[in-house]
Length: 187
Image 1: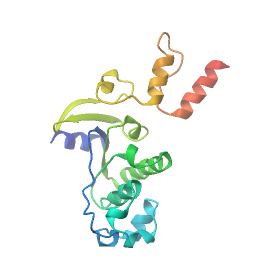
Image 2: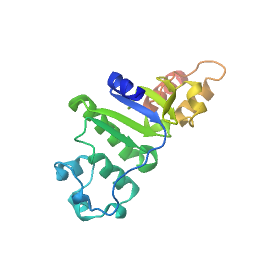
Image 3: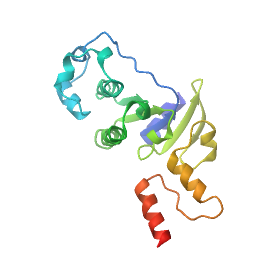
Image 4: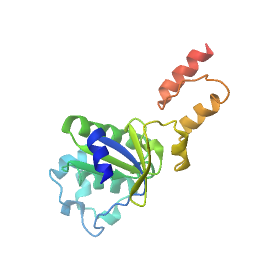
């Protein structure tokens, strides 16, 4: 599989594709095969009260977090739909957690989403997959070809719009860097 080679090379990659959680909805959280379940719950921002809840009773964000903790002991962690499953604060926390898992515990991570915003400050390489084949890959968030497959993030759209005639603002994907650059250029 070609994506496996890329994962070995980069460690964390973003994949533009669809993702579906495959947990048995009839089980309780405590019935899932999870090592150190109480610590795992805390790690993703949940508490022990979730142990007796069934999977089907969980919200979308809780389901995402439970899906993640079922994969923490694996060498390759595959998660998906960060953008639609989590609010901004939780998304940023999960990104930091995934980076920590990769850097400190040598986990290989695949993030699957249809929104490039999920990959910002997390992955260096983005792969577009159609029919189980890589149809395009890039490491540039400003690559116009990438946006033939997905919607452009607002920050990229804004910077491209401002720089349409002449380069006035540096290309960045960090909102704080954008604000600093705008302040420097206006003063």
